[in-house]
Structure formats: structure tokens, C-alpha cells
Image (cartoon, rainbow, N blue to C red):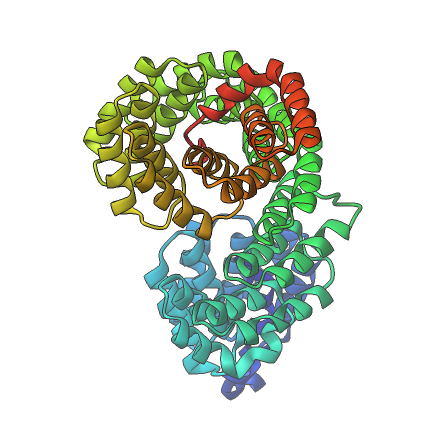
Length: 525
């Protein structure tokens, strides 16, 4: 955020010049000073060619020559002729080093020429001549912020904070120095100062709002961006403004408002992959899978070979049980990102969902070998090995997953299944009991434990766990059927018959339910 100081430089020239030339004022030709006044008036009217002519007239007068060079240099600066501007301003300073306006304008030229060291020297000279000069202090403070010298930046702004609060750049630099030095409570009120400004262009408003949001002052940043959005004609909200406002709401964890603004951004720029990808991710995390899929479909049409888009599309298809749609997209994405875990991992999850265990295993084994300390990969390969009946190998990987990350659920569950299938029912019962004490809402664990307890003739305990399993997963054929058998054993014939009949009606869904149970891996890793 850098504002042009050319006009201010001109005005400062005229304020400082009479004092600098006071010793010779009585002998100064009137027409030289009048020519300068005319030149400045013309500059203010935007008539730079006529202003140039009047300033050159003043070069003939020794008493106005230095100021005339300064005015000419400032005119060239406004005309973006930086090389000539630097020469003219340099000559003005050579003739009269105390011309503050010339120093400021030359500093601005050096800034535009990307010569920060030369610019800094000029700004420092201005402070020697005029310690309270807000423009020079702001420029130097901005430089300190860029170099991460936040305390020094604050020292520079302190004497002129009142003036800086009246400009977008001043507020930005002050806020950046405060936020980056951990003084969020002092920076927050600057948003209110910003919102009192009028006619602020959208670009600096976006920059200021994002600064606040990114440094944790999210509500204040949103307020700045919302005000910029409401400014209305003649500058309607831009795509960049709406897109960044959506991101601010996303950081606030307000998915509804974030999606609302991503949709608005897409109405302004329908082919924005960034907006489509982000909106798809928000909708997916919010459980709106169909909406997420619609964004991914649009993104896929725009960029059919983008691995990120293919992964997102495939992942959502997987979650929606559209495995035949997910597989080709994820296969292509995995081929484009052969070493990336999420791509191979999600494709393996689809292979498991389709009961293609050998293919899933071939995808996971290289990942486990390359990343042996990844608990999720150890879990995944262990789960696949379990479904293939390799119980000892599965138990080894699942145990390693638990060792690497003790606070997890899936590995404990499948390890208990592997132990059970090796005939170690007592050990499996102990593991599942411990698991459910920590995670009482795990339907699979409740069902499995109920069945084990039923086999162990611990009928009352078995009934409790099977009822919990049905409560958690009412469509479980096995839990309904086994509880019906148990109740029949206990003499509760009426309820037993009802459950057995219900299990029969659910049996046609068993194939789909079984396939879903074999989705062992979380594609969001």
C-alpha cells in the first residue's frame, strides 16, 4: 500500500521555500514567484504541460531556481518520467538542500524505481529537516514493517498517529506493526478508524481486511471487507473482494456465509478454479456432499487433468458410494501424483470399497515401506490384511499403528477382530470392553462384543451391547438377528419374533451394508 506524494511534495515546496530563501526575498523578482504560484495552480488542475512552462520561466530567477527545479521534478513524477524527475529534483536539492518537498518527491521517485536504500536516505533527511513530517515517518515505518522491525516501526509512527489514522496507508502500517508484535487488542480499534474513512478504493480495503483476518482479528477484518462490499456504485464489489470475504468467513468457521460468498464470487467469475475448489471443500466438510460434488464437476470440466480436482471429485464420489465414478478419477490422480500419500491412499480406499483387496494392498505396501512411522498407513495395511485373512500380519501392523498413535479408534477395533478370529475370545472381549469405555458410540464394537458375550453365555451383558448396537445402527442385519436369537433363548418370544422378522426385511440391504463396513480408511487424511 503505497500512495503517491507528488502533490503533497509540491505544496510542501511552496511552504518551505519562502523560509529557505528569506535572506534574499527583498531582491527576488516578483515574476519568478508568480510563475511558481501559477505552476502549482496548474498542477492542481491537472494541466501539467502548462505548469511545466510556468515552472521553467521561474528557472531564470536565481531566487526561485531551486524551487522551480523541484516543481519541474514533481511534474515529471506525475508524468511517470522517473529518470528526468530524479535529475530535476536532485538539482533542486543541490541548490537548496532544505527543500523538504524536493526531498520527499525524490524519495518517492526512488521508491518507484525500486531503490529502497536511496529512498530511505531521502526520508531520513526529511526527518532531519522536519521531525514531525508524517509522510516521511510513514514511509520509514513501512520499510521497518517490511523488514519485520515492528517495534522500530511503532516508534516511528508514535508522534504522528493522529495524522496516520486519517489515511488508508497509515492505518495499514500501524495495524501491521501492532498485529505482528502481538498487540491485537490495540490493533482492533483501527478497524473502526478505517470504517470512518470515505472513498477508500477496494484494493487497499481488501489488503487491510485480510491483514486483520490473517493476524487473528477476524471479526474486525470481516467488518472492513463487508463495508467495502456495501460501498456500491460506482465501484461494485469485485471478485477479489467477495472471494476474500468468503475466505474470512471460512476462517471464522461460518460455512454458510463462506459458501454464500463463494457462490457470489463464482457468479462474477464462473471459471475460478480457486473458488470452486474452496467451495467444494467447505461443502464437503459441512456434510453437503451433493453440493460439493456439483462444484467438483464444474472444476473437473474446467481442468480435467488437475490432480487436486480429480482427488476432490473422487473423494466425494467415494463418500457418496459412487465408487465406479470415483475409481477412474482417482486412478488418474494417483498416476499424476505417484509419491503423494493422499492420492494413493484414497484410491486404495476405493479399491477396498470395491473388494479389490489385492490392488488396495499393492497401493498401500509401497507407502508403508516409505513411511513406516505413519500410523494411518499402518492401520490401512493392517485392515486390508485382516479382510484377506492374514490375521497375524494384520495384528502386527495394527499393533504398530497403536504404538505410533495410542489415541485412536480404528486400529483397536480391527486388532480386536483379528484377535477374535484367532480364537482368543477372552482377549478380544477385554479389548472391546476397553474400547467402548472410551468410545461408547462405536456401533461395530458394540455388535462384536455382544456376539462374543452371547457365545460366552453372558446373556445379560450381551443383550445390553446388542441393543446399543441397534440403537447406533438400526439397519444392522446381524445385530437385529442375533438379538432376536438371544431373546428367543431367554424366552422373550414376542420381541424375538419381531426382531427376526425385521432382520429378514433388512437382509436385502446386507450386501450394501457389508461393502460399507469394508470401507476401512478415512479418505480425509
